[in-house]
Length: 340
Image (cartoon, rainbow, N blue to C red; front, side, top):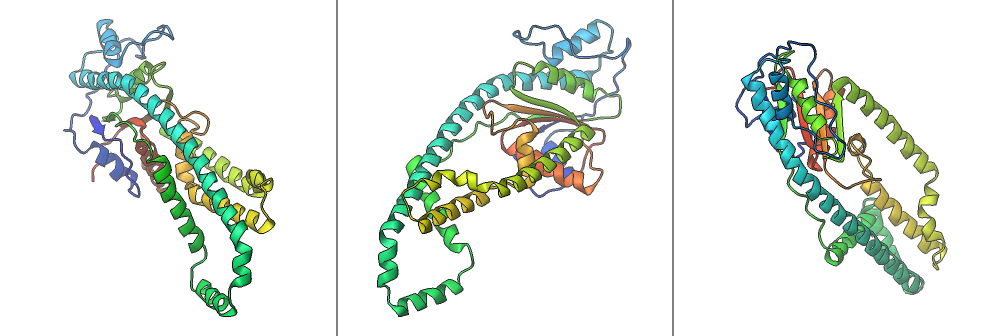
């Protein structure tokens, strides 16, 4: 069966509900069984790396014409919709390259302005801090100390952070808006119905067209998720032991020790605020390391998604939601149609 999904993340839902929701709007047309007459059918090869590869509809019809596959109306319908998605992806790749270029400029400008604001606050504290401490009366200091006891730890930093972010919104402007992603496709049908064959035809045709692309079977994906989680936890622990190097730019500033401590505290708070949940961090490395190369669209072909245990449901729900929310196009297969 073919399904279309709006590419928007759905957080905090079970994977079954998630996949059923993205498929909800399409009528049920399960794939009929495919009968291979002359061995395994496979996506065509031999096309030049610089030439556009034939799409899934062309590949499917070629196999039928060669007598390697018996024609099936449901399979041809799926191949047609996969072909339409392939054509849309060519334009989407260019749109995403432009978006990521604008996003990178916006992020760099915002970080420069953020440091400038931080240094201005540090200069004000350096200039006025000693005078304020010396001139405040004993009563003022006592009232201030009592007020601080009633304030939750970190609230002051949180308010300062929010005020700084509001100023940055005014100075730099809002974050660029990402282009609307094409609808992905969700296939279900019995074993041997041709789901994986058609998905692989589509995946092969995206080579050279989409920069960031992966094809996973469920078990392969779960192994990679475990590896990424382990690497991320290890890196975070290593970063804590060497975090002083991350704030080395502060050590050479012309401020006294207390002001530098304040600057490091503000930077640590910002770092902690932006630190991603482990599943979000895994998702950002699942297709491409977004820290090294942000440009271009991304597509994930996921074969035989399963809901076999709680960890799989939670992990895949979080990761797929994150990928869809950042514009990844998903083509997936399941054996049994998921209902809610």
